[in-house]
Amino acid sequence: MLTSAHIKNFRSCKDVKLDNLGHMVALVGRNGAGKTTILKALEWVATTALASDAFDRLPEIDPGEALAEPSVDIEIHAGDHAYRYCVARTFWEEATQGRPPRVRDQESLSLRSSGDNTWQRLFDRTDDRVTFGDRRPTVELNPSTAAIPALSSLLANSDPLQPHIVAVTEVLQRVRYYPGQLIFHPFDPVDKEPSGPISEIMYDHWAAAHASGQPSTSVLFRVIYAHTNRPSIFAELKQLMGPGGLDLLRDIRVVTIGDVEEARPQPGRRRRYYDVTFSPTRSGAELSLDQLSGGTRHALYLLLGLLYDESSTMLIEQPEDGIHPGLLAKLIDILRVNTDPTQIMLASHSPVVLSSVQPRDLILVDICEGSTAVRTLTASEIQRAEDYMQRDGSLAEYLELLQEE
Amino acid sequence: MARYAVLGEDRSDVETLQVLIRRLAANPRLRVKTKGYDGCGGLLRKGARDLDEFSKQGCDRFVVAYDADRDDPLTRRELARTRVLAPSIVAPEACCIVVPVQELEAWLLADVSAVVNIWPTWRPDPIANPERIEDPKEHLEKLSRDSQRRPRYSHKLNNPDLARHVDLTVLERKCPSFIALAAFVRANP
Image 1 (cartoon, chains in turn purple, blue):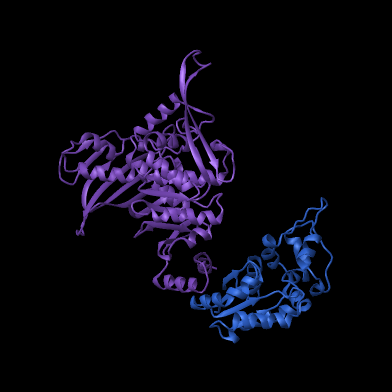
Image 2 (cartoon, chains in turn brown, red):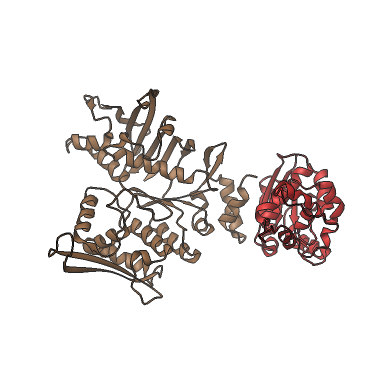
């Protein structure tokens, strides 16, 4: 679980500190205040920490912003230990004609055990050199490779550093960002939702990428995989979407169409296909995914994120998109009861969402002179919020009264 | 320096009042917190609770705006006093109840020439008695229609902007319902 983050020079987050993050965190604030930027910064640090080509790219930062020297420093709790991981990019030579600016990438990982107040440095990395806190020899890495995956491969299983690498990896690889709309990466053919029945070849290709750790945003492929390999998750998804839960779908079917002769690319060759259909509660039809309403697709997407992805931290953008307020309250409650082990961090404008969280879970996000600023409610504001809600007010209404003039 | 809180029937009303209060006080940085509801029902049900919260946040001057809407302004004033001010912790002398006749948009009609600051090609005739217009908002929308019959004016978008440009002396002369607010703010800058 992420327990704190310090974001510097990441878009509008010039210097933003988030402390004492709990299992449920709600970022609230006006459009453009920086809520999405905060979520994206957390996604960035988690993916950068584990990417083999992390420092060849800064997917969310253009070269101009890279010159601002972004850094994100996070604290993670895993078991009895706390870890601090920091990634920073500093530039040390300006661009010249024909050559981009030269940057220096730095990472560090530190450990603090339960009951201990001091941080023990596990490793420091600057460019291609990794030094260790236990004075073992320096290791040189490919400058584009993040240290954690490289060390995970290099170190023996018996190495005392390895369990910490594994623990941090397990948390970070399950930090997932869920955008407000189903957005598929246009250049990632693996994750593009197919139309029509899905061939065995296409599914196997997706499954191979998934097995190698590549996260997936595809609803269809994950439903097929759950149906085939994780029946308890498939059953729970149906139950939550069904009449006893959100009451959106009375059935989800995955049918294997076997032994179909292909016309192309090789006439005569026989293939298997998977056909996934969804039956809305108040309709007799069986529909494909793209025929479902946007709200139903969004609910499916979020529940798959919760059940299938087994995220350590779900970074959720506007869960209310396309969803009726009455349904939204139920969906948020499903997420809320699943906090611990999953941490839920969401950005929202919805009064329904805000009514579903506690005042202490809120982070107020605002923007001042182009810089994002965050704060939590003070103890007296929390007390007044609770008094206010006792007088038939909602948390959303109370927050509106706190807005600066 | 006073710190204001304004309650009104909707967001555009309170944002408009925020502009007018700052102009009356001749202080663009005057602190004015606002709360608009989804109609007068919300104001009457929740106004006292929100006056209390604003008071706890440090506000010391309050304005409650409740449109007359073709009702007797004195009846409306009394309703606002009994349902919003009296149940709150706010002292009566710290609060100004304003009852625009028939709606706050009448104040904008008082100096309708101000629209030229937003729509340079729209130059309406002056309106002598804006408080006699039954539905000032609708009247403004009708007046604003262009040659394609499309209205230029939207109260939610444009009221605060118009309030920046209306002549306050004209407003005071043509709209008696504005005088109470003007006197209150000038006495409590």
